[in-house]
Image 1 (cartoon, helix red, strand yellow):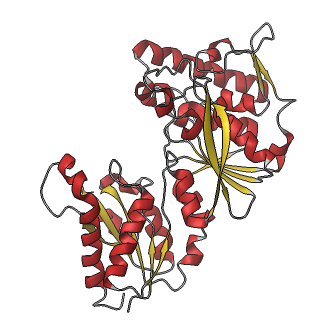
Image 2 (image 1 turned 90 degrees about the vertical axis):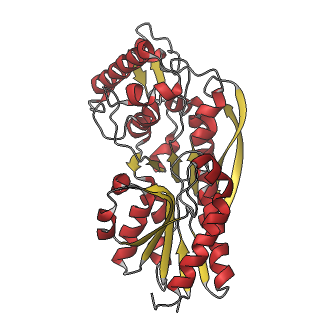
Image 3 (image 1 turned 90 degrees about the horizontal axis):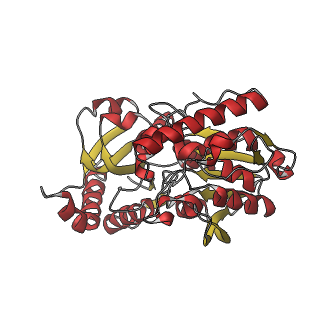
Length: 379
């Protein structure tokens, strides 16, 4: 008999946020059996919606802050302060995200300074643990903007401060860390990163992610050369090799600055949120986990949310059902890591634009069918 179900989906990209998916799945469960206890754990990918997902999962409040946007214009931004009062959750997109620049996309000029201001405010609030999601950035500055907001000075050969953007990196000669915020020493910073791209090169920040931020071929080459120079200066000053570290290409290299200057650690976003919400404790007494995402396919083994959920649940022998929009080819391998069944919400063969209009009701009806079927058995 089903008594307790954990709901832990990713967003369905382009249609529903993870919080919305959670609520619809819960409603579908309650429509069939209102006595089933549910625990909702929305999963976000580090971009827009990350703060809301954490606040929904573990409660807390939003803290509103005035910061600089990627082009140094004043904006109202925010971060999440979790209920323990010492953990902050930041989505860098709220200060340095692509939507904030509109049609003025130019990764030569954009900066992560506003993200650093969010970090600084969290430190001033007494936070000793900061989780930062780095999806959706408009920047390619290697994180020097954020580091500067925390007190690092980036200087040219004449000792003058360089522009805190992707273009300014070409003038970098050295940096000074004597005025970096001392509270960083007592703060654990976790960077939610789900890509393995290095800082520079053909698979690096500029060439892979630059085009979506407005970079043309000439600009990509300049930005890549600037990041190579940046890595060389870091090695010269601190003896740290950062160029080929996996994940440093995310968010235009923001992770590099956070690791080098703030002592941050990079971890898959799914692991950070599951650890923060004590997911494995929540599994105690659970009869079923329902997870999901927009599409599951042969690439889902590479860090996708349903796989991360299943790997944790399987250790506790809790079955997992994935409810998804589309099912791609070559998914057989996912059954070996803890997913017991996959169901598609597509109840009618129609184009995506039409399916978007009915996706919420389709998800609801699919969940109702799943619960009806699962209730037949002692899962």
